[in-house]
Image (cartoon, rainbow, N blue to C red; front, side, top):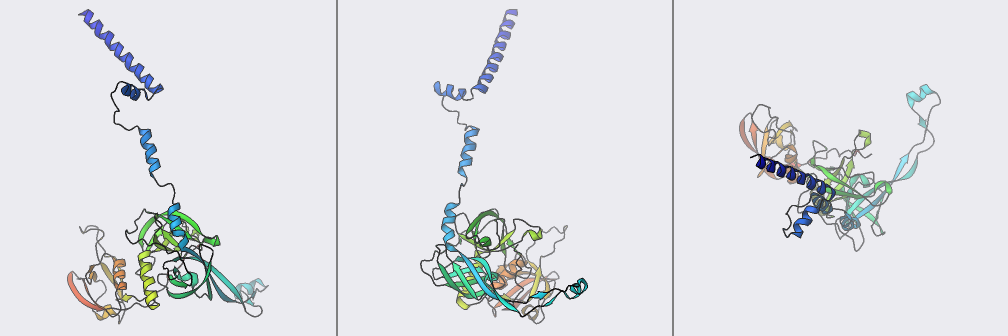
Length: 395
């Protein structure tokens, strides 16, 4: 018995010593196990080494967006809008008290000077139509467009839409590179995007970022929504292209919230679908017409203990404009609107988009709830009156 116990103890010490020796060898020579198995014909274990997996993952990501830029950049133009500005020289009072009270007094006759604003645009048609921002070309006497290949063309304004801050220009030139429009898949939060434009007069520049949010409302009364992006947008980028990684147009850069508002990386672009609707209407009629019910809306309030989902559908009426279509149809404040025509209402912004898309004079059925009771009424839409334009927060 003592002999058997001694034998087992010897074997145990040998096994422990062998495992320790194998561990040391594996630290000094990590690949010895695989080489030994291949030498004995046992094949590969089938487990991918972690280092090789990490290396493969690094190589699988995008390493360059040069192809996307090469497809989109020729369609983006620089815009130089010139206008004459009348100014009056002012002489300040030498007396500090008078200066504080009156500021200054005219010094000599008024004079005129030429002022130039810089911006960008996107060629959207082989016929010479260019999309840009309205604030880039507003009140301009002369508009010059610098093409990607160095040609310069004089542009005329076809029409403008103050509410979306879009304008359509027309240039007379041949062999124009038309940008491809992304009309297959909607843009999503997190998508990589490239902003192409003419920032600060530096000529064409490309910046990269992601889509930070979609459906942003910059005005509670506007039916339009915006793409928010952290791609750098600077003065002069206005009217330029926001493109995806395929070089397709997803938006028109329009404004940024600058450091003056203690913000960084917050820019906005008009979605290409909205821009195309404005483009088509301006080309057809020279202006944009929207339907209007004559009411303001807000989100449907939901109590925390109501048992209803937090994002309840519909829009609650907050104000009715006297004599407007909604007032004539009997819609009242605090009504909850759930359906317009054949479409369900998701939220106030969705309702504004639906009514704006309808033609003035058209009749549409509106359904909702009033004091807990369902109701239906017909509204004859009017033409949407001019609204306050979106304020530019550039810089």
